[in-house]
Image (cartoon, rainbow, N blue to C red):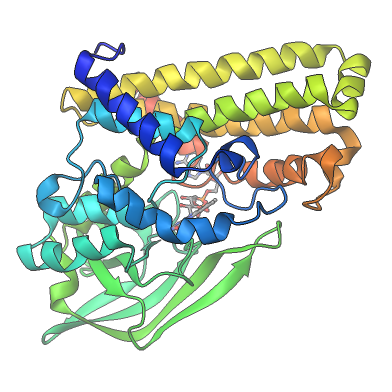
Length: 401
Ligand SMILES: Cc1cc2nc3c(=O)[nH]c(=O)nc-3n(C[C@H](O)[C@H](O)[C@H](O)COP(=O)(O)OP(=O)(O)OC[C@H]3O[C@@H](n4cnc5c(N)ncnc54)[C@H](O)[C@@H]3O)c2cc1C
């Protein structure tokens, strides 16, 4: 794949830049709104940002960029793989937020592939408009990496299924309108073959969402309990007992992001600027000269990550579905997250302990928060060990361990 822009791609890039120049205030891109892709990683709240966000989705939708990868027939932008790449790249460098999350990235595409006409026409427009926020009800206390061991049951009863069981680590369930749920519909079948995939209204009676507060004192995760929850049979996505295959499609969508590599390059730049420009950064560099090499390594690694992403994109451009390549990208990216956070700690020294958002020497608490947050990267979306297993088996042809 040619990564230099063709004439039409350069024109598209110009259009994206012009849109951002006109619509995205510079103070939100030059002042650090977010670090990495995670809301709330640190920094003082930028005045006006939350109000600004309220009208942003509508502006993106007006350009067809609310769901740029989705086909036009489903209300998306119908952009080519390369145009999506350009859009992601330009937005990420500007630190401009995009519509996203489970609905746009995972539920929507899986519904497009496997949904009935009714499911598509009812659910997809509500994802794009932002009316429905989705969560992913996959992991259970005894089923994370080995997801196919899940025990939540869905038993057919007339026109309904009755669901009982518990999910855990469900990000954003407390804000979600809808959830993608996988549950066991045939306990007698081999474990991968007795699972079905449902599209569940989170307000259905019998669903209880309980908060799990993380070590950043932030409520992102939840436990979700299902007690005799009756969901209509029409919420089944695809065929009964074929849900495992749909779930792995969902996970494949989950593993093909690009914006993280730009976020990592930005963090590396921010760290270098801190080392050069702040009194504390300069002092840290003077007492620990090896930090120079560490920072250089991180900057190079962030660039290497983007090359790995180019490979994924070039496969998608050829119509191929990245598999082990997506695991390589996920592994490299989450391990780099941890290395960047560790380098940030070395630079910040004891100031990293200061988590208050108004503390300049700790970059508004970013150092400490980023470090704590980075511990989740090698776990969420499939652990690093599991990615290594995939690379070993599907990439190197090694036997299952
Ligand atoms: C930030 C974040 C957000 C999340 N959001 C969601 C969400 O929205 N919805 C959802 O359903 N889940 C979510 N999860 C859960 C996540 O998918 C699981 O935590 C993950 O799949 C690991 O499962 P587990 O926690 O049960 O750990 P386990 O699978 O029990 O793993 C424990 C340890 O054993 C290792 N291990 C397990 N199996 C193997 C193996 N075969 N070979 C080598 N090592 C192995 C693992 O790598 C890990 O180190 C989220 C997790 C995080 C961190």
